[in-house]
Amino acid sequence: MNVGDLEWFVTLAETPHMTQAAERLNVTQPTLSRSLARLEQEIGAPLFDRVNRRLRLNPSGEVLLRHARRSLLELRAATEHIRALRDPEHGTVRLGFLHSVATWLAPELIRGFRARAPQVQFALTQAATYELEALVADGIVDLAVTGPRPSDEDLAWHTVHTEQLCLVVPRDHRLADRGRAGIAEAAGEPFVMLGPDFGLRRLTDDLLARAGVHPEVAFESAEIATMESLAAAGLGVTVVPRPRPHRADPNAVYLPLTDDAAHRVLGLVWRADRPESPVVRRFRDFVVSQEWTAL
Image: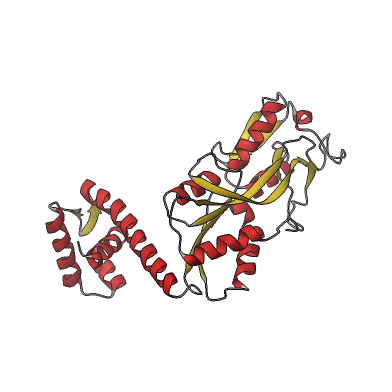
């Protein structure tokens, strides 16, 4: 199967109009049409339905699109790997990281490494914990900065940083002047939380369960900043990592939690059983060898 035909097919699937796809690829429409016909002949089935001069993927096309994307990713990874073998000072590290570390930990790791290897490129992905674990497991990203530690035994882990968890309350809350608090003191309060699949949500649920607290969930968010803002507005209390300097919500009070398990461990995760390029191994070794407690 021709790699070029596969690449053009993916573009056509993403731009379901033959003329627009041809312009995007900088080829003529007849050339693109012949490529599609060649691919459909080799597959033995049509890949698109023609609807009002537009192309709509049919079930056969959807199957091929999934596999084509995966195959092209593998080919690009192989090309990058071979290039890195020839010149380990270049190459690309595919790095994933949590949204909550996008403004401090992830940039700090990248900055520190690029001071040593300025020619290395990074392909970055932001996602939630459960998504990052799947991306690493599937080989879509090489490494990910996430937390807590994954339960998948195929994923290797190195602890990078530990964060104190805080209870966030509005400034007029009954606990606002306490300075610190135990999670049990929030019993009876509505909670603003992340969705059930998020790593911080699992940590929060565990803290509450240990304290025998069964909270009413007032709202489920996908972002920590949203949780902080809603807690500041009085919708409910929430649990978040201690905010970085100048990033706290000014209308909220952050009470460090006194519970033993009230912390989030962040770390670097990768597939230990998958061969890695020298540049990826070099970045991983750099992160593992550094002391990041001052972050």
